[in-house]
Length: 563
Image (cartoon, rainbow, N blue to C red; front, side, top):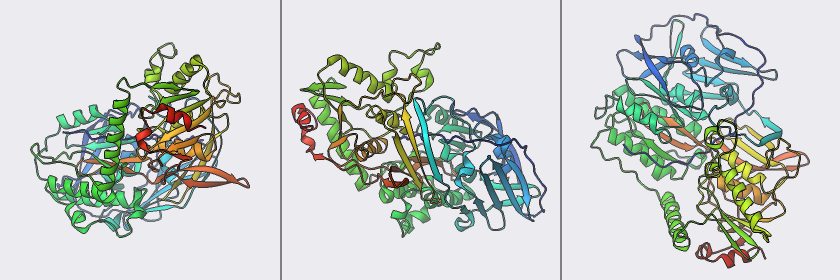
């Protein structure tokens, strides 16, 4: 099985103020004969160290002897304690039929309402799904302090599952959802996903594309490789995949006519190679953008199957440009020099991916910064390069080379931006799913002395970025935000966009993929005190254009950009 390339952005966690604690409550609803459901208990194996899920088992339900797993909503949410703060959620039946899930803060009430008659789920706000614990392995917010923030919660959202032929079942006091749909709603947006292989359930960080140990465990214990996909699983493959693309794909409005009918029909094939070809045709040929990829094969994949990935024209152009730049850079700098000096300009080659190191990678048991921390974290990498620049002396301008940087972690990008300025760093986001938007402004404690008000940045230097079409995602945001804030100039080529942080999803057959999620990054300016959001999908623009043939091996030309 092949591991696929990936690019990951981690969003800053929302801080939630909980008002009071309530315990699970559940009322018995009317009985409806919807067939026979068999409940089976499976081991829940947690590979995601960011969330300490406590349950070691999970109940799955199977209708009329089928292979498609369902979950009962109450027990499913209970099993997610450690990801969700489940003790704050109350369950009750309202009216005759609707199951209501509620949690509250001092300021707001968040609700989910599940209606099995209309096969729909209503949420008062997408913030309903944000009752989660902080990540335990990595502090994505270190050296960042939010000074002010404002959000417009947007509209309630209805997930009309019935439109896709997805049923919600109620039997006595149990409300049952397909397992893959429950995972999409409750897990995928938090960079954790559940996989069921017929033997156990596996919780992986983001997806198998980023959690090789989870993938090895699930694949080694799988017993269905090479078998035909069961009919109920195949139908849910199609339904769940289309549901995800329609509701969660951030660039969905670019496809008003939908997707090719031939590929859509083949999504429900019981032949895994056919279903794989249909999914990858939509992901690679039709969507065709670098935040979208097929991540891991189905648990029904054939050991001898042909699982070659197509390459759409936009992806091909991006990869060709990336390959060209990489070859040119290595030819000019075979020793891979992270820092060069030319005249009164220092040139820093950016670390890729832009990354936040875990606590264990950065600090020793006594809390001291490790000598190699700068190799594990982009903020410390930049500080190390800046220390070398100060020791060198005589430098007036700094050029950060982002030409081969395809993105990474937003928290790290914010800290990098804080090195350039003592002003607040502004970040905005808009959501196509519910129309919400928010912004936050942050201060960066560059010298990590606990004082966020002191002027500890390196703003005395004149800053510039060198960008190309490969400068993507978090790197693209860094260039866009810095240029629009007037703290750096951009040289070279227009950056490559990539506005939507990625979400990963799991299909009914255990295959997985990731896409541009529903949130879109934006820079924020203020007009008469009101926030003005500007998207970054179109790239940063440039102050001075420079042909890429001068990117490497022509440091005199790069130095002259600041003249």
